[in-house]
Length: 60
Image 1 (tube, rainbow, N blue to C red):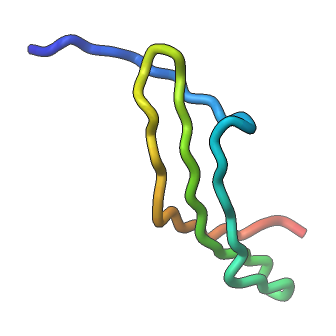
Image 2 (cartoon, rainbow, N blue to C red):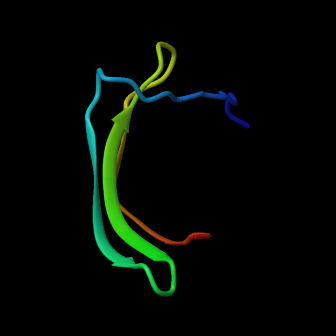
C-alpha cells in the first residue's frame, strides 16, 4: 500500500473563486447555483474545484 496523507485545505484571499446563484425560489425556499475555487496548504498541492453545483432547500 502507498503512503497515506491527510491534507487539510483552507480558503483565504490568496486564491480566488466564484459562486453564481442561478435559481432562487422564495416560495419553496430553494437556492441553486454553481461555484469554483482553488485551495492549498503548505504540505499539499493546489486543488482546483471546477464545475461545482448546489441545490439547497433552506428554512425561512
